[in-house]
Length: 104
Image (cartoon, rainbow, N blue to C red; front, side, top):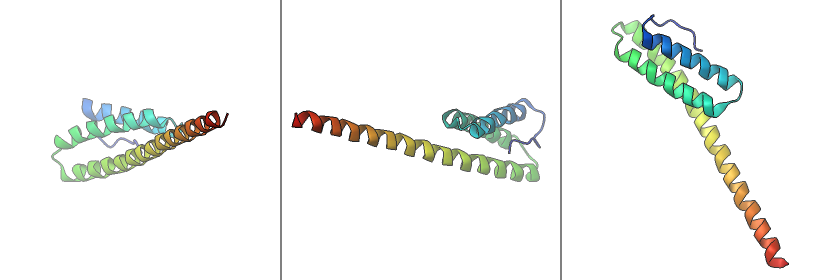
């Protein structure tokens, strides 16, 4: 996904580097870190997009940005669900423990 068809300017190089790292972290199931890298990489690609005049390149950049945004949104949803599940479990365990103390 992080293949480079971008120019050699510093923003393009940085975007490719950060997005490659995001994909690596994603494949290792290190989702919080991957999300941060996707967000940073997307921001860098948006900067590249702003400076790009060629319509074909702009279209390609938009497609890439869209794909990375979709993946970042999916990770964010997953992390939010995981956090909610942990909070729900914590409340359930706390309630269970409090109930046992009330009975004794």
